[in-house]
Image (cartoon, rainbow, N blue to C red; front, top):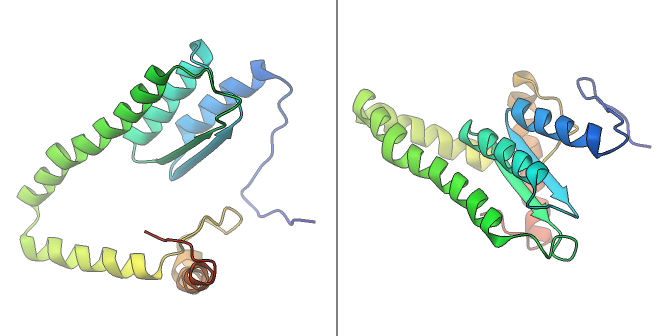
Length: 164
């Protein structure tokens, strides 16, 4: 049996009446990542409310991933898919055209280069797979993160998984 880790919780929801508002609330509370897998995603008021919550999360910098079943959602209006994709593109465009230029104006080039080197080093050490059961603490990330990343990269090589 899987052991539970402190800081997690399970909420039982009995129907869409409870589920969809909770899903939207969780999207609005997300800080790092959202991974949503669903069999059916409809272009209706509920689907659009969920799409809006996902877009809000993406604008906050939350990595947002959605997987929709091609059979269960085969009637999904492609305009909603385009709209969600455009929301994410707008977020990236905002970073590239507004936020990053402001950083370049305010931070000396040498400091930006130093920060970039730190990011590159962190990427080489960081895990390549999600570990939702791992503690979300600074101490854990600093102590165990590099080891977890090394094991992830070994698994990636053994399974021919691309890590980008």
